[in-house]
Image 1 (cartoon, rainbow, N blue to C red):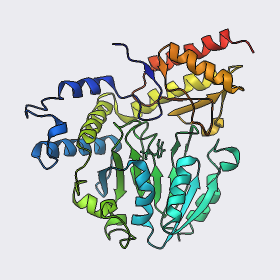
Image 2: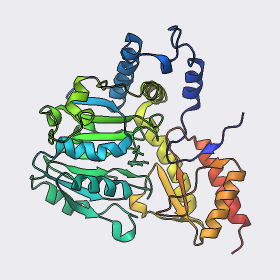
Image 3: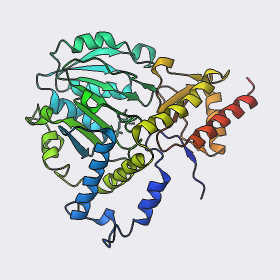
Length: 366
Ligand code: PLP
C-alpha cells in the first residue's frame, strides 16, 4: 500500500504508527473484548483513556495546575461563540484580525457584546501580522475582558512570532494550526484552544485550555449560553456533560504520546522549522514560485506560495498529484498553493515536494 505525501490543511496527515496501533486495537482495546468505538464513556476503561490523554498533554505543554483542559465538540468554530459567552463579563473584548478565522470569531463575538478591532491586516489580504504595539497599548488600558488572536493563520500562511503585550488582560488564542507544532507558554494566556484535525488527531475534538479563575463564576452570559458550552460545567464534568467524541479523544491521546516519544515540543519545533526553511528557501530562490506571506510573518505550519498565473498553479498541482503529492491546492481566498507541513509530515515528504517544485520549474516554459 502506497501512502501519499499529504500536505492537507486539515483534516491532515496523522503519524502512521498511531494509525497502525489504532488499527491493531480496533476490535479489542486492551483486552476489553470491545472497540473503543463501542465502549461507554462512563466506563473505567474510557475514563483512563481520557485521563491519560490529558496527563500527556499536560506534560507536553507544561500546563499549570490552575488551568483546566477540556475536550469538546463543535470544532474550533463553536468556540468563536463559547469564548464571548463565557468570558465577556463587562461586554467588551479586543480582536486582532489576521485572517478569515479571526474575522469569523470577531463577527460571532459582535453578536454578544462590543468586539473592538485592535489591529487588522485585511487591507493587504492578511499577508502579515500587523503591528502589535498599538494593539498592546489599547489592551493594557485594562477595560477589555480579553484580547483575541488567531496565532497561526492556516489560510494565509502567517503566524505570530511574538504575542501582543496585553498586560493583565487575558490573552485568548486560537492555536488550531500551530498546536503542538512548538512549545507554548500556557501561563501567558487566559485561554487557548485548538481544533484537533491538524496536529492533534482527527476532526471532531476541540481542546480548550483555560485558566480556572476566568470560569469559576460560570459563563459571563449564563442567560443565553448553551449549557453544553459552559466551560465551568464542562470542567466540573470532566468534559463529559454529554457523550464526548470518545474515539477522537482516544486518538488524540495516542498522538500526544507520539509527540512525547519523538522528543516533545522543542524537538518538534526544530523539525518544523527545518521543513519550513527548506520550502521558503526554495521559494525565495525561485523564478517561478513566490511566497504570499510577508517573510517576517511566515508560518512554520502552512507555507503559501503561487506563480503569477492561475493556469500554471493548476498545472503544478496536477504535476504534484501525479507524483503522489496531495493537498497542495491553496485556499480560494489566497489562490496558488499551500503546503501544510504539520508534525506528521516528514522531512522526506517535504523533500519530495521540493524536488517536485524544482522539476516543475525546470520543465516550465513561460
Ligand atoms: N481556526 C483555525 C486557525 C482553523 O485553521 C480552522 C479550520 O481549519 C478553524 C478555526 C475552524 O475549525 P473547525 O472547522 O474545526 O470549526
